Structure formats: structure tokens, C-alpha cells
Length: 310
Image (cartoon, rainbow, N blue to C red; front, side, top):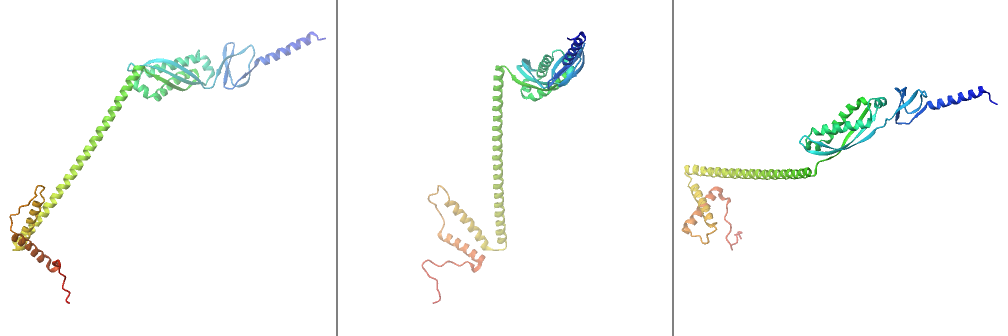
């Protein structure tokens, strides 16, 4: 039968075991626990097996140290040009210091949510609607910087702040669509006008080039005519009668060609004597003979065979 001493020893052993089990705290991965002694923060328990003093120390706050997401509800924002838009978003944050997150702010998620919503109104309210719709990345970057600086004292790191939807009113959307169509029509008209202008410039340059070449051709023809006249004049001055006959025969032949090429001339009246024409042609032949010598040989007559000396 157990004596009173044995019973006391047994009770003490049980109490010690209970105290040991009460002082063992297991912290899961991704969490930190704060320890309070008589209501005052003393230390932070990290993931794994930890020991505290039972009945003296107690677990204060259990904080999630993983990155967390916080939905920002839809709110109306008035832009700088007095347009009302509905905006919602999402914020990502992570607790870096468990003690600061537990004791520097009351209601951590509510504080982050209100901080994000307030800065969304401040940042987007300082911008025009067009700037708001086209600079979403700049808005996200600015919001992230402001929220992260404000939450730094809470032991919080804001990792991302993203604007999900920007919804202008329906009548404003219709106005924007009409403005976009008008802008595109304007661009199309400008492009068409530029194309017409380029075509006209090219056409004018082509006409200028053609006129320049025509003038150059006329100038060369005039130079050749002047040169020919000079040569004939020099020949006349030297007493060369054949040059006069050649010059007159040339002009005479050109005049006959112009008379015969008339579109309305069905019958050509030539008030000239045949002997004069023959004489002129003979003069041309004489000039050619004097010029080229005996190299010009008259072709044999039709129906006559050349003499072979037989």
C-alpha cells in the first residue's frame, strides 16, 4: 500500500509532465507566433518545436508569413476631368516582421485594404480619363511605391498592387467610340491627301523633266540648224554654187513633204514646171557626185543586163 510520500512524488511527476507538455509549442511552416509574458511581447517563435514557460508565457498572435492576396472592392473614382469611373483591384503583401505586424497596427488586413483604396482614389483622381486608360502600368507602379512606403512601419512588404478593371459609364464609352472613329477617319483623310499630294508632285516633276528634255532637244536642233546654215554661208562666201543648190533643194524637198502630209489635202496642186523639178533633182545629184566622187554609181536600168565583156 502506497504511503503519503509516494503519492506526493507521483503527483509531482504528473505535474512536471503536464508543465513540460504545456510548454511545448509546435509552429507550422509559413507561420510565426509571438510570445507574451504577463501581457508583454518577449519573442517570436519560428516554425518547428519551441518551448515556453507555462502559465507565465502565452501565445499572442499567430501570423501568416507567406505572401497573401487581398481583393480591393469596386469603388467610384472622379478623374481630373470630372469623369466618374468604377475601379477595382488586387493587392499582394507579405509579413516580414511578426512583432510589428501584430503590435504596430490593429486589424492588419483592414488597414492594408483601406490604405490601398485611399491611394487608388488619390492617384487616379489626379489623372485625366485618357491618361488613366492608357497608363495602367504607371498607375500600378505608383500605387505599389506609396502603399509599400506606408506599410513599412507595420512590418509589411507590398509586393504588387494591380488595377483589374476600369469601367467608365456607358454614355462615356459611346462618346469615346465616336471620338475614336472620328480620329481614324481623320487619319484616313490625311493619308489620302498625302498620297494625292505625292502623286501630284511626281506628275509635276515628270512634266518638268519632259519639258526640260523637249527644250533641250529643240535647243540641239536649233544648234544643228545654225551650224548647217553657218556651213552653207561659209561655202557661199567661198563661191561654192553647189552649196546654194543643195540648200535650196533641201528646203524645197521639206516643203513638198509638208504639203503632202496634210490631213485635209486630198489633191495637191503643184504650180511648178516638171523641168524645174528635174533640174533641181539633177542639181542634188551633181552635189552628191561632187561630194562622194565616183563612189555613187547609178543602179542598172530595169530589164537590162550588165555587159560582161563577152
